[in-house]
Each structure stands twice: as structure tokens, then as C-alpha cells.
Amino acid sequence: MNIKTISKESFCVIGKEGSTKEGATFIANLGEDANAHFQEVSHLAIKKETGGILGIWGAMTDFSRGFRPWENGFREGLYLAGVECTMDAEAPQGWVKWIIPGFTYLCIQSHSDNAFGEMLAYLKEQNLPLVGAVQEYTDPDSGETELWFPIRRDT
Image (cartoon, rainbow, N blue to C red; front, side, top):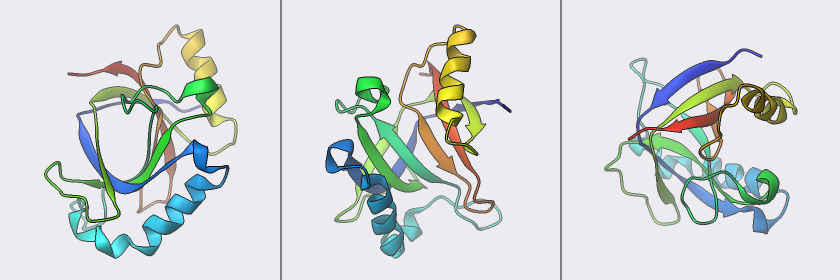
């Protein structure tokens, strides 16, 4: 397992929000909705120097919106399928804006179905706390998806 450490200051994601209460396919449905209407937010997305979009996020939080881990054994919470935007961006109608707090993350590529569980086991072995909700980051250029596990909340 190739693990990298990333410290990321508070950042903004604008996307389509849903809940695990909506059923097993809710994340796929949110992704389809966000992709189908992406032109409504594309101008708000932060761009890389190369001109491509900085990041696509599957942002997560608990039901309190405190950016704590999903509840009930990581099975229940809120999800935002969106794009990283400037902090002052306004979410268009039908979209939701989240400001994700700054954290230091341990990040792994999401190549297997077991990646989440393997990383939780690693954190336990290393006596590292999971201090917030795990985030999914996708690099639009490479299509690679990473899971970001917050181990320290930064102020």
C-alpha cells in the first residue's frame, strides 16, 4: 500500500448532495446528476496551470455536518459529488456548497474494494486516529481516485 501524507487547508466543494438514507445507488445517482449538469458549475471550478480542473470530490460528512466519520460503522452519512471551487463561489440553484475544514490526510489510491478496510487496519496498527470523514479525490487528468483519511485537524 503506497501511502502519502497531504496537508490541505480548508477548501470548497460545490456539488450534488445526497444521503445514505436514499438507498444503495445514491452515490452513483449523484454522480450522474452532477455530470449531466456540470456546465452549470464548470466556470466556478479551480483550474490547474495546465487548464484542467483541479479536482473532483466525493466529499463526505456525518449527519451533523461536522465532517466527522460516517456513522454506524461507516455506513451512514452525507455525500457530495462535486468539484473544487474557490471559497467565495456561490452554489447555483440545485447545487450545494460545502467548506471542508483543513486536515492532514493519509492518502491511498483506491484500486481495490478493500482499500478502505486496509487503510483503517493500517491506522489502527500505527495507533493513528481517524479524526474526520474520509474523502474521495479524483484527478480529472489521470482518472485516478484516492481515499483521503484525515489523521489531524489543522486550524
